[in-house]
Length: 183
Image (spheres, rainbow, N blue to C red):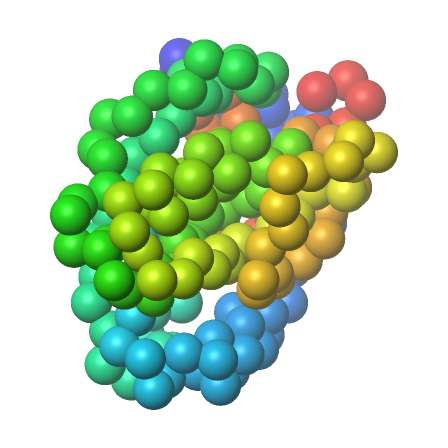
């Protein structure tokens, strides 16, 4: 990985969601989450590493008591092609038992990763599982779940920015970009 490769990826992409629209969507989602969860003292779990930026943008808007932790289940390993081989790097803690759990992630593609997280958390005794994603990818394939809270629906293209990466690059962008045909 190097700077030139990162710049080439950027040049083969286009902005599909502006920074202002990202900010407005996060504020809207926070209001929806506040309405649904402000009275339940939820456990909020961020999926590392993609959700780090989204989580950092969303949490300050959640002005009610909550507990925060993180989990790490990965299947991408810095590629643009998903793998069905999932690896828990940090599993949910026992603190999910008898709790309302809100899981934050950057994107819901096919939904397999979030479904695996949901299944594990419910098997550990959570009272209720909910999910919030910055983006949900519009694909023709049926998904095992839909997010409870979603910032944007994005086309079935490879997207990055706001925590999502393209071959390990550009998680730091305040916008959401999509690779073009040559990308």
